Length: 192
Image 1 (spheres, helix red, strand yellow):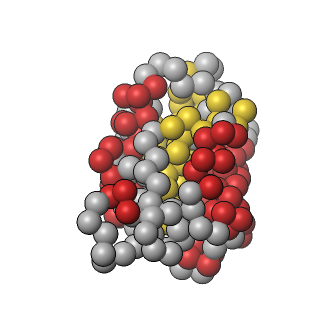
Image 2 (cartoon, rainbow, N blue to C red):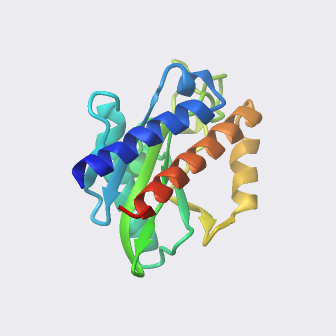
Image 3 (tube, rainbow, N blue to C red):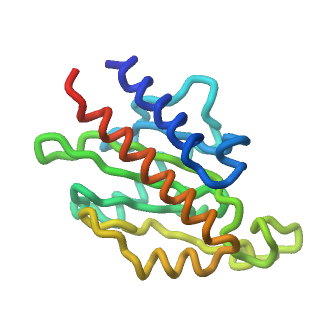
């Protein structure tokens, strides 16, 4: 079982590298992918490939999602999060949390935290030594249900991507993250 979960995480990494739009993901591999359980505990990660600065706060991001949405997490939901005040790292590192269910109960969460090349703010790349407050650094994404039971929240996605430079690349990376989580879901649900 342990090796199966580790294999799924390795495949998540390969999927993101092959489908990402931005070079920071497909060349720099500035992302991490994990499987977490319903108690926000680590189930599997790639040994030696994922960044501890991404991995450790993922449990805090998941706890923030669970605090905000409680029992209102449904099959087909997808959550985004980057807010450092509720478990994120810096604004460029966006976490996608993808709940999977088995027998009607939450089973495991594929999670990807990936560095987006720009999330708005006062300077391209969203990293500026001149920033004096977080609002100058880019768009803060509190735990948000970006897909509800399989239906994307188009208004929220438009708002997020309209406040970032290079929206085509951001949207491409977002879609790559969705595809990565879907690949994990496919593997988790595959017969042994």
